[in-house]
Length: 405
Image (cartoon, rainbow, N blue to C red; front, side, top):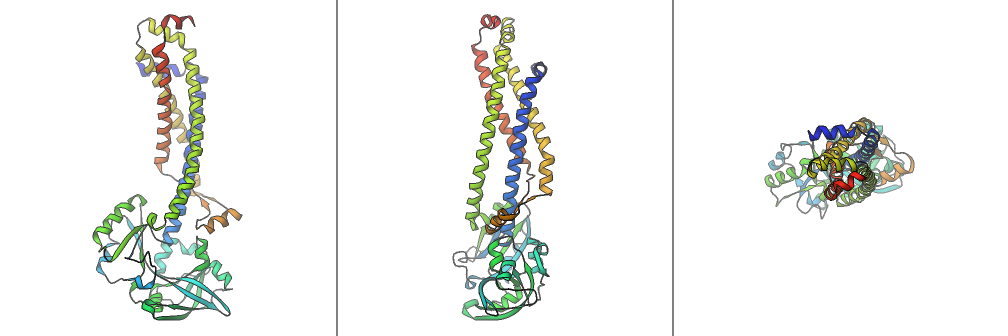
């Protein structure tokens, strides 16, 4: 009966109800849209970085992270390492051998990051086919390299030119070789564009004198929420005296801090938005109490309890808020869906700045349902807190005085 009475009361003053519903609708609409764009961008940027650099989870030899040299590499023949790909939610594993070398072409020289990779695996990880600006993807048995776009410009390289490398290999052996350029690649991170050279893993092992060895295994999962569980599983199955298992947040704390700092700005904007909506809703409640003081006095006079009167007002507030929140989610979903499939792409100086920071200059929206649920719950909690004022007023209301208003 009280629910029915509350529902009918909503439409006694359609204009007031429409104003309240509209304010909640706009709050949820903008909150969900802004947060979806923000979290979607973080997910995209994080994914694009971790896929090349560390993976969602990285396995490497103990001591490698503090001293990233070839002497801290490990043998791939260890049977323990076969367990990594068999773990639940593991999508891909990428074996890599990284070292530094001095590259030279003609009279130009530059220090580079020489990375031995499995080309087809890395193509699946980083979508290299879409990033190649000239040439073609190398294969596992090639004796050629792929060069970052900016590095190619600095060395005046084009496809077919030969790069000479000089370095120190495993356990101090001399490493030297020359390789033709098979492709020029635009990597997501500017620092990789300026320094990275990829060659097949087998060839990198031969070049560095590190046969059947790797410096790391990057693990990509299908659900980022399963990363902590995967880390625990691998730590329990691998010999932790030989191997270290590290998630991307531990590997790249500066990226985590950058996201947290940027996210704080978004949270402040949402707080301001909800403050405005809260005052708007509270003003509506004040108006409602003043307009219906006589009604409440009559109801008290005929014997209706104060708790029931407040319950009706409470139901009115909750139903109005719920209606606005649901309409807000329904209204924003097509917009979020569009930007999820058609991310906004930055251009000009903004894009250059983002690339320098290692972020892909696109802004997709997240379809995570928890975003909409979270903001619906926030607005519902605000509505419930606001009903504390009608409870106070109705508790102090005197029927005789109220009927005189």
